[in-house]
Image 1 (cartoon, helix red, strand yellow):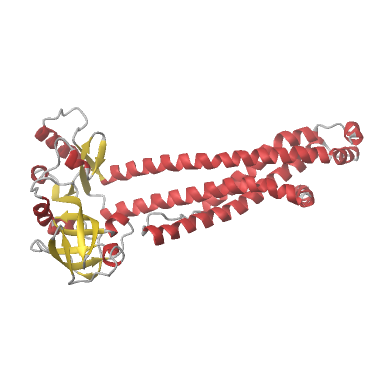
Image 2: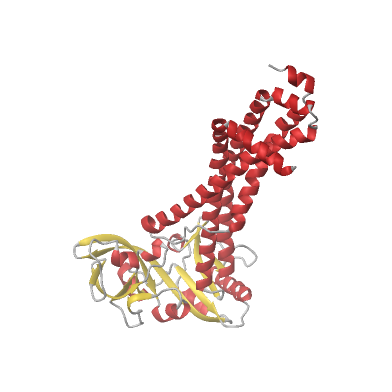
Length: 406
């Protein structure tokens, strides 16, 4: 019986091709937008998870805070910036294995007469390499050591894209008029800020900017078996004491976060952004649902006499209701199938454009089958729900009134 209803509903849609396709478009747009946005959002979340997994769960990050802003650049504008003194305090805390400071500055770099503003990372080579040994891989050259005061490492884009001429190991670059030799070239990481950066010894960078104390960020790696949350609490406590901040209040000039807390913060932000975008896309689905309802009402008016004939030969109210619900559900399902296909295409195209134009691997399309199946079910339900009121109206028509209808 259900199969007969399905065939009947399909034939009715075929008879009104233009109107059916115009109605389907509303569902297609909404489903395509939702699938595309969710796929990209989940892909971005997976990329973030991979990035933090590579950093490891045993890291603690300390950043500056100024005017509510938390970032590597907030330290310099904070009333009490992060300094070498903070590094020494953290180094003495029980459970801390390695501490490494990072200094970030945007400086002018010159290669063969061409000048560019480049993000420069000043690192403590030995500590940083030991802490983040799995993050950076070289396609040519080597890492820095503590004696490399006039040596630098280049991100992939700096070596291959940012300047007109490619830069190789052994080439010389001037940074703030000081000459450095390139000793290492990094593989593409996928983060534009890292790929378009220069890495050098933190002492060399401090000499160039004339400040021996300030750092942008501090990283701490804990000992195996240590409780990372307790170590983080102790770091926060000792830094508050150093800054004369109240122990029972949130830190005013810095923030201490574990890898898990950072990941959770990123996840919350991504979740909010994704929810807003999907909410906007859902408006299209609402419009599509209204279109289905309008189409079904028009279909009832055109087929009033046909409904009367079906009732006269024994069709029940439930039979008429089922036929029209099948039609509405089919419109939603067809729109869903096309919309899912277009949504996958949009997500994949966005991923490719991001990789080529922006040089980032963060924007990825997550090929999650549950998303696609859920979208199809949702599209079908939108059709059924939108067609319920018109279908009920059709099922309640009296045979005599329906046969008289002109």
